[in-house]
Every structure is written in structure tokens, then in C-alpha cells.
Length: 123
Image (cartoon, rainbow, N blue to C red):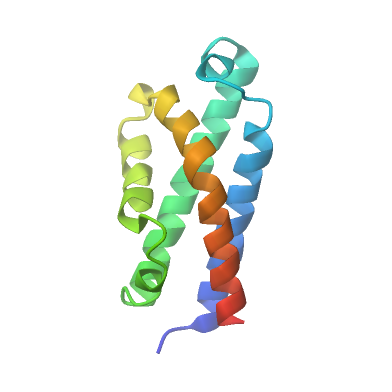
């Protein structure tokens, strides 16, 4: 068995990160909103930092639970979500704003919903 309280804490922090991304993404309507202003670039940078934190948190959860928790929620591409962390962290100066826009638009809402479900299931 794994440390359930630790996993719950990490899940809460990860959910908070998705909520921050959602708030920071609200005023971004297209990729140009990221790339054509200092405001947009600051948003892009801050969202990328949160995506790194999310990926690292998910890696930690996988390690703590020996790969047993995330596999119970197949609606999320966990490997891709964790892999995004590596791409951003190691290729930071080559981050594709279009990809980050797409992730924010298409993947953060279902990730947030799944994290909420996981928290509810574990509590």
C-alpha cells in the first residue's frame, strides 16, 4: 500500500495547478495572444511552468503508487502528460505556442475533471 495522504496532497496541488492554467488561459483566444505581446509571453511562460509542475507531480504519484493509481483513469493520456513536462523542461526555448494552446484548450479541462474524480474516489 502507498501513502494515501501524500498522494491526496499531490493530487490537490496538481488540481490547483490546472485551475491556475485555466484562469491564466481565459484571456488567450488564439496562439497570437501568446506570441504577439509581453502579456501573452508571460502567460505562456507561467503556463509552461505549471505544466512542468503537473508532469513532475504525476511522475511522483506514479512512483509512490508503483504505477497502480493512474492506470485506473484511462481517460487521460498519462504518458503524454508526463512527457510534456520533459519536452518543455528540456526544449524550453523551442516550445511551440500552438501546442501549448492546444493542450490548454483540449486537455486541461478533462485533466482537471479527472483529478477531481481521483480526489473524490480516494477520500
